[in-house]
Amino acid sequence: DTGVSQDPRHKITKRGQNVTFRCDPISEHNRLYWYRQTLGQGPEFLTYFQNEAQLEKSRLLSDRFSAERPKGSFSTLEIQRTEQGDSAMYLCASSSLAGGHEQFFGPGTRLTVL
Amino acid sequence: GEDVEQSLFLSVREGDSSVINCTYTDSSSTYLYWYKQEPGAGLQLLTYIFSNMDMKQDQRLTVLLNKKDKHLSLRIADTQTGDSAIYFCADPGYGGSQGNLIFGKGTKLSVKP
Image 1 (cartoon, rainbow over the protein chains, first blue to last red):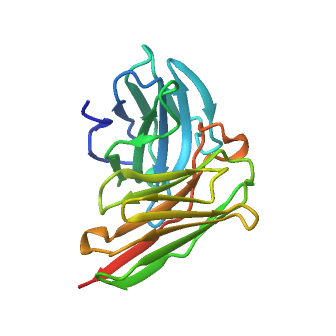
Image 2 (image 1 turned 180 degrees about the horizontal axis):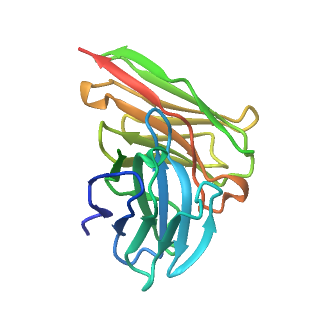
């Protein structure tokens, strides 16, 4: 068990470009979560999946953001037409519906929008 | 809405105890969590406490929960320089669905040798 992994670890893009991040949860974890963390703040919830179903979305998740988990394993988070305000650390976490309530986090993807 | 508040900074000397405090607003949470974040890294789950407990001890960590005052604390005994990090208190939010962790802004712990 290698823990939650995220790719890429860092992404620099120009305003207006689209970016996509990937998260691989701990194997057999049913739930997968996305959070965003800006400098000096705690993580803020964006959305979560149980298997392939997206069960909850925050008001922070504007129309430019879309998340998928097509086969109930890895997930992608896409941001279209990036803005400078999207610069943040994007964190993924997973948990097991059967095993417990704890959310285990990946190392994050740091996005810088120029 | 739900909110989690923490003091932003704490500085201690190596070997002393550290106490990090947190207040929360949602009274229906099943669990409350403490996470640690080192610079440039993700969050590491340190410990949690079930809402029907007052105290939980795990090696150098002691969690105290006062449900009446909605106050949670994390005590680190014999604090080491490797404990320097940001510590976050987290609450599962309304209904404790565990779909939406609400984090405080974090307490930056500095440990001086």
